Image (tube, rainbow, N blue to C red; front, side, top):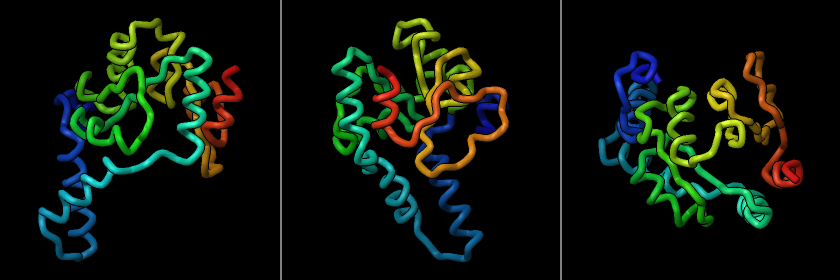
Amino acid sequence: MIDALCDRGHTPYRQIGHRAVSYVMDRSGIAYTQEEVSWLVSEIEKLKPFPDVVAALKELRSRGYKLTILSNGDRDMLRAAGPYIGFPFDHVISVQEAGYFKPHWKTYAKAEEIISHDRSSIAFDCIGAKSYGMRTAFIDRRKRPFGQTPHQPDLIVANFTELAAALT
């Protein structure tokens, strides 16, 4: 985020992950090896979606929605994560394409370009997309307040099942 704010270009997600894990381990006084750090950072690629997600995405696709991932992960990480996600998206976009992490507006501008639809017909999660003029939905699984920002989501739901129902 600091590199993006300083307009220094894209820093690979793994590099940021390595820095963050090493920092936390150092601060906590926990001994580690770089191999352990690499392993831990790579585990993010194996995360599976919440149980409600895939069924809701299938429902949205059946109604004609085009579905896209816009991720702070790098291209190779997203390819590795594909089998664990278990759903074929129309577009899988890494912020690496734009050179800036979300919520920088250039990530959403690049997504709009790749998707080839006007930004007013695209919905993402959340502040950066809203500030760029896209529609937004916030999945509030933990029942936390969104916060006082001028970029409030258009829709707040508890999970993807509620999102699919709301987008009829």
